[in-house]
Image 1: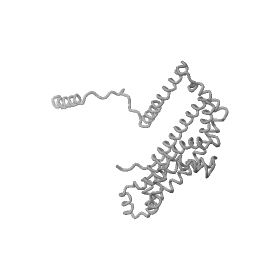
Image 2: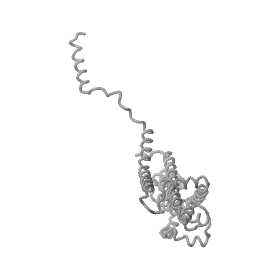
Image 3: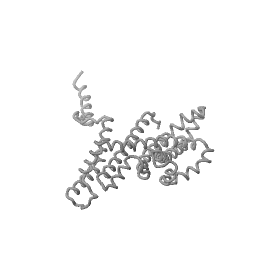
Image 4: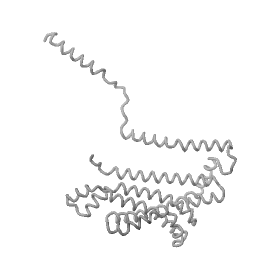
Length: 294
């Protein structure tokens, strides 16, 4: 083979290489795996969310250290920390928090079960929706705290009255979201199920309930939050027994702002923990569901 026959192909190869440009640099940083990138983004969001509380505590500490506010209402963060340590070591915090969480859990479970049953009844039965629906719509417009006098007369001021109050707080959102989720199931899903000759039980368990699950879980999530908020209201208004609400009342009556602020911090952290727990359960549940075809 002569040189003249080889040279044109070599020239064409060199021109194509110049048009493509230089090869990519092998020292480039490889992209992060998806799980690592998700974890970095998640923890980055947590740290960004901590900026405002840390800044508020720093300003609070400076104002307290420089005595810029001449009032006994402003105590230092160190005093709150010391009070919190004393409450923890003495066991008072554990007793108060466990009492509040026990009431919250009891009311949440009772209200959630009742809300699922009532919401399913209103969602599946036209007769129940026509007979009970208007009464429920009126009932949920009444402020929850308006039932306190009636509950205190019927059940007293003990834990039974508080659990009934918390059950009402959990019942309303679960019932409403369960009923709305069942009604919001697309009609096409039901028609396809009927075309495959699904029985009524199969239609409910395999089509309607899975489609309504996001709305149902939203109601349960709201019930968890509302029942915790209602726990403090019940302990304020039905003052018999122990709890975080009673800890706040004792602090205000004794004019101990360190105890009041410590109780507020505990309430906020507990609510944050319940919220994080509910979100984690929600992610775990929906991660197991098969992805819907686009």
